[in-house]
Image (cartoon, rainbow, N blue to C red; front, side, top):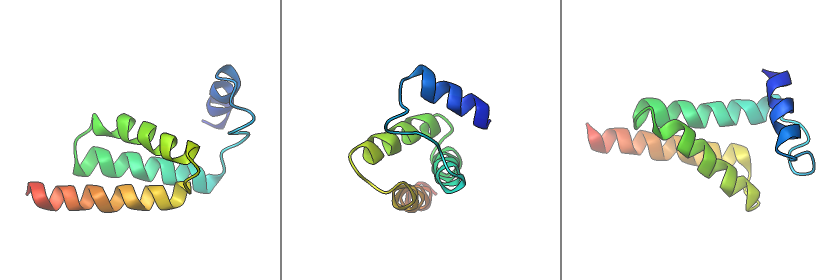
Length: 81
Protein backbone atom coordinates (compact mmCIF):
# COMPACT_ATOMS: atom_id res chain seq x y z
CA UNK A 1 0.00 0.00 0.00
CA UNK A 2 2.92 2.36 0.68
CA UNK A 3 3.90 2.34 -2.99
CA UNK A 4 0.30 3.03 -4.06
CA UNK A 5 0.01 5.96 -1.67
CA UNK A 6 3.29 7.43 -2.88
CA UNK A 7 2.05 7.13 -6.47
CA UNK A 8 -1.11 9.04 -5.52
CA UNK A 9 0.87 11.74 -3.69
CA UNK A 10 3.09 12.17 -6.75
CA UNK A 11 0.22 12.11 -9.28
CA UNK A 12 -1.75 14.70 -7.30
CA UNK A 13 1.37 16.82 -6.76
CA UNK A 14 1.07 16.70 -2.99
CA UNK A 15 4.75 16.20 -2.14
CA UNK A 16 4.98 19.58 -0.42
CA UNK A 17 2.04 19.04 1.90
CA UNK A 18 2.09 15.24 2.24
CA UNK A 19 5.67 14.10 1.65
CA UNK A 20 5.06 10.80 3.41
CA UNK A 21 2.43 9.21 5.57
CA UNK A 22 3.73 7.72 8.78
CA UNK A 23 2.26 4.67 10.48
CA UNK A 24 0.34 6.84 12.97
CA UNK A 25 -1.15 8.84 10.07
CA UNK A 26 -2.34 5.70 8.32
CA UNK A 27 -3.78 4.34 11.56
CA UNK A 28 -5.67 7.58 12.22
CA UNK A 29 -7.11 7.69 8.70
CA UNK A 30 -8.13 4.04 8.72
CA UNK A 31 -9.62 4.33 12.21
CA UNK A 32 -11.73 7.29 11.13
CA UNK A 33 -12.96 5.40 8.09
CA UNK A 34 -13.68 2.27 10.14
CA UNK A 35 -15.76 4.12 12.71
CA UNK A 36 -17.73 5.96 10.04
CA UNK A 37 -18.37 2.75 8.10
CA UNK A 38 -19.37 0.59 11.06
CA UNK A 39 -21.15 3.03 13.34
CA UNK A 40 -22.82 5.26 10.77
CA UNK A 41 -22.97 3.51 7.37
CA UNK A 42 -20.46 2.23 4.84
CA UNK A 43 -20.73 5.13 2.36
CA UNK A 44 -19.88 7.52 5.19
CA UNK A 45 -16.28 6.22 5.29
CA UNK A 46 -14.81 7.85 2.16
CA UNK A 47 -16.67 11.11 2.70
CA UNK A 48 -15.58 11.21 6.34
CA UNK A 49 -11.95 10.67 5.41
CA UNK A 50 -12.25 13.43 2.82
CA UNK A 51 -13.59 15.77 5.51
CA UNK A 52 -10.79 14.68 7.84
CA UNK A 53 -8.33 15.67 5.12
CA UNK A 54 -9.95 19.07 4.79
CA UNK A 55 -9.60 19.56 8.55
CA UNK A 56 -5.92 18.59 8.36
CA UNK A 57 -5.40 21.00 5.45
CA UNK A 58 -6.83 23.70 7.69
CA UNK A 59 -4.12 22.93 10.24
CA UNK A 60 -5.76 20.29 12.43
CA UNK A 61 -3.92 17.38 14.01
CA UNK A 62 -4.80 14.14 12.24
CA UNK A 63 -4.78 11.99 15.38
CA UNK A 64 -7.05 14.44 17.24
CA UNK A 65 -9.35 14.68 14.23
CA UNK A 66 -9.58 10.88 14.11
CA UNK A 67 -10.49 10.79 17.80
CA UNK A 68 -13.20 13.38 17.21
CA UNK A 69 -14.63 11.31 14.35
CA UNK A 70 -14.56 8.20 16.55
CA UNK A 71 -16.43 10.01 19.30
CA UNK A 72 -19.00 11.38 16.86
CA UNK A 73 -19.53 7.99 15.23
CA UNK A 74 -20.01 6.24 18.56
CA UNK A 75 -22.46 8.93 19.65
CA UNK A 76 -24.28 8.59 16.32
CA UNK A 77 -24.55 4.81 16.77
CA UNK A 78 -25.98 5.23 20.29
CA UNK A 79 -28.61 7.73 19.07
CA UNK A 80 -29.56 5.50 16.15
CA UNK A 81 -30.10 2.39 18.29
